[in-house]
Length: 98
Image (cartoon, rainbow, N blue to C red; front, top):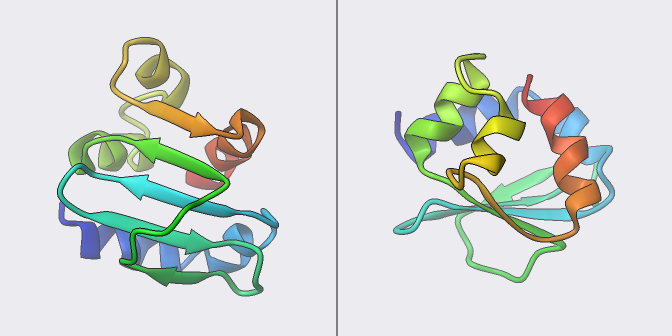
């Protein structure tokens, strides 16, 4: 799955992301997806901006999380998902991504 496919999936949850009250960046190594969840509905971009919480993960692993094939906690514990910044926001994201 491509980053644009992930963004399209996230756009269907724009209101949920907007309830975060924070900014989140998904870092896919070669591309980023920035979500401004301080706005309702959330605003998405490919800008590499500073965020309250940055999640470093492969697009395939994020897709597996979205499909329910990979538990976010397990991904974090095994190093497939790295969190920089607010872990509280990362915990809120787990509920949105399911």
